[in-house]
Image 1 (cartoon, rainbow, N blue to C red):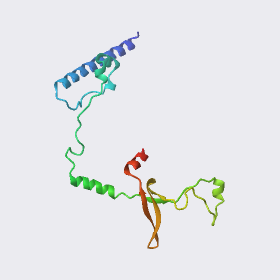
Image 2: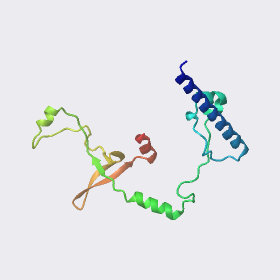
Image 3: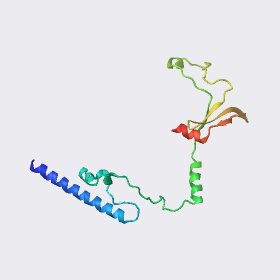
Image 4: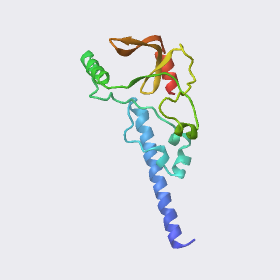
Length: 167
């Protein structure tokens, strides 16, 4: 072996020994102390292969840690929950009603002009889809209120079903 290779190997061995010693100290400290966060433990992935071999599974085993609560560690009060809910309630969303859809080639699309009729996939009298930000939330029918269109909801999709469709 060359002198450089021997030097590098010696440095690797020293580093592995240092890691092994540090891991042994950490393990001893954890066994003698109460269960708690191991903030100073080096990550198992950072240990050299020699150190992991010395400690077997102990060096690569996952450890659970007790983590403090975020936000000061206090219990969220009713006022905090109301304030958080108010922020969400003020977010604007787009509600739309879809009468129907169809697919057609660009050639036919370019031939459309005033008076053209496009047949939709939905049947007459079938409930319309009510969408919030593009997500189906209900079915309904068109109504006229004070000379404006409105929606009468006939079937609302359950929250569990809406969450399932998001996945």
